[in-house]
Image (cartoon, rainbow, N blue to C red):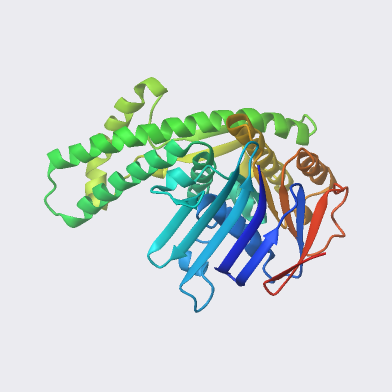
Length: 363
C-alpha cells in the first residue's frame, strides 16, 4: 500500500496543506522545529487516529482553532481508499470511502504504518507502559478484534476501579461479577498478545541475527502479572490471581493484576537488553521495526508504510544499509532529516520536499 495524497487542515503548525507523494521514497528536509515531524505525525494519525507524541488531542489542533482534519488517498493492491479524520473537542469522526465508521476498530487497519523514531530506544529502556502501548498500536493495526477486546477489558477495569474507590462497604458478590467479566476480556487480550509476540520474535530473531553479524540471538518474553503456566490454565490462574489480590485491591482501591499491568522483555543472548550497550539497543530496535514490516506483510498481504523520523543520523553505515535494503523492497517510505549529506545510497525513485515554518515545497 502507499499514500498517494495527504491533506491536513489546522494540524499543529499546518493551516491548510495538500501534498502528493512518491510511491517509493519521500524525504522531508528542513531545519529543526519547522514541521517535518508534524508531517509524519499527521500520517501516523491518519492511520491510527492518535498521535505517537502526545496523549492529548487538543495539542494536535492548531493554536486558536477548534478542530482539525486529516485526510488522504490510500492506494492498495486492488483498490483506492479515501480516509478521513475530523477531530474536535467532542471527539473524532472517522470515515472510510466517505462513510462514517461507528467504531474505532472499523477504521484502524485500513492503512498500516511502521514508525521508527529516536525515542524508540525507550522501547528497551523505558517504563512498561511504553511497551504496552507499542503492543496495542502494532497489534491493533493487524488484528482489529484486539482493539475491540482491549476496549471491553478497559471498560470493565474502569468500572471495577471506580467501584473500589466509591464505596466503603464492598459487595463481594458484585465484585465477583466484575471479576468474571475482567477475566473473560483479559484472557482474550493476553492470548492476542502472546500470539503477536511469538510472531514478532520469529521475524525479529532472524533480522537481529543478520544485523549483529550472527553474534546475537534475540528473544522476547511476555511478562504477565497473572501467574499462569500455559494457555490452558490462564482462566483459572487469572481468577486465582484476582482472588489473592482482592484484599490488596480493596485497600489500594485499584486493580493489581491483569494485562494493564503486564510487560514485554527483550533479551539478547539470554540477557535483558536494557543492560546492553546503546549500540546493541539500537540494533534491537531496528530489528524489531524491520520484523514489524515483515509481520504486517505476512498477515495483510500488503506492505506497510514506513515512517523514519530523523533516525538515519542515529545509525552507523551498517545499520543504515540494512534499513535502506528494506526501503528498496517496494515499501513507501517517509524520511525526515535536517540535511541530505549523511544519507548514502538512496534509491533513484524519490521525491524531496523542503519544509519551512509549516510550508512544504517540492524540490
